[in-house]
Image (cartoon, rainbow, N blue to C red; front, side, top):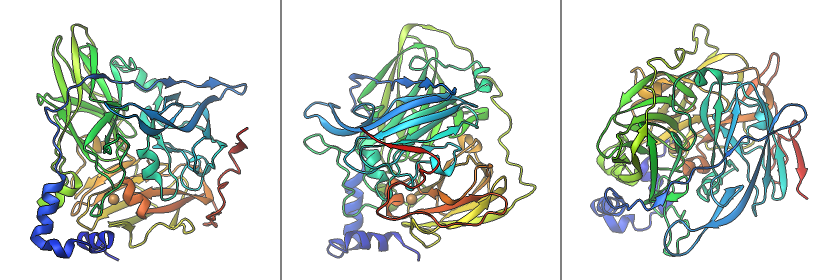
Length: 517
Ligand code: C2O
Ligand code: CU
């Protein structure tokens, strides 16, 4: 089924008001209702909060053990009332978990929320039972303790809830955090790495507040995307500034929004160097003035700063590759002041970014086990909405596949695959540019511009428990734009997904789960 924009609007809105508005009136309504521009309007009064690092504890078998507790809280983001929030180990967002390649980690995730949730390690190569998707539900008062060995390069990953049909709401309430992987290769490079001083994590999120300062996640009758906020929080800080004491800083940026695309750049249009994408370092730094990230994508950049000056990290109107009328309700005309960087009168100097950062980003495609096509439309992929009981296909462990992802409607989408980092082979037939040339787990997919990616699946197989692929516009995901695949070992066949609507203990056979006491 092909869901066109207007058809879906009609479905969403039940046709209310559309007829009354008529074509031109409807267009005018969308046009006038949605534009947001905060350039020059932000007073930068709050010091940027830096999420604390949790290194964990080494247990008696040498594993690195982290503790996360999901719980309700409240936070004063701005003048007026406190906002009711959810957070990990605090009121809003969570600690930055940090571990090294090769380590075995265990995370005790305790759910002290009033409802069932889950925690997914976005970008991580993990056994399906530890993935934290919708099959690894954690009931209130339970603790889920997944364990896995980190086997991928240094990167800025993140974690967030993934409960079936409710990911958007759980993330919007404040449940997200970074998971930084370190390795010897990255540490051998002369890059800024003083966490919170010249290596700055930035979780950028748009929010809409009600008049009494509560998070407003009502997508509105005409929304195709879920809520688009008109205010920005960075690491949970409203109107943030950062005092800098170095002549170069590294920004590790996560677009932690549910639906908003950001097109980052600086207020004085200074250039910067992108050094990493979702899955780790780029082969070479990419010099640019703009960096567009869709929900769920990360990138790292290094920017040069001058002593005694200020500059503002902004989001310019994103390039959404849709027509003018469609751009407006997708936030395509919106601009934000995001973070002010205030450089001290004297700064310490940092080395220039090396010319070569890592090995070429290449998946060997001489032997391709399968080529698949994914058509994204409305809330569907290949014409179907997500079904927890349907495994869409199986892939062979240790095999290489090529996936072609097409946006076949007039909406804006992206595409995220669990378990793997992939190489983008082409975008609309052209070689990928900038951060798209690095390891990716989430890509923007525009109509008329199919994205071909290649990935190698590892040896972690499980015929019964699937991984997800989906649009990371969380409203699209929650409405059904998601599918499931399993990784099959030698001689394995697609099994039966052990899912029932009432049970919340799936995937726990291999991870330990203990009731909270
Ligand atoms: Cu960041 Cu399936 O998710
Ligand atoms: Cu989508």
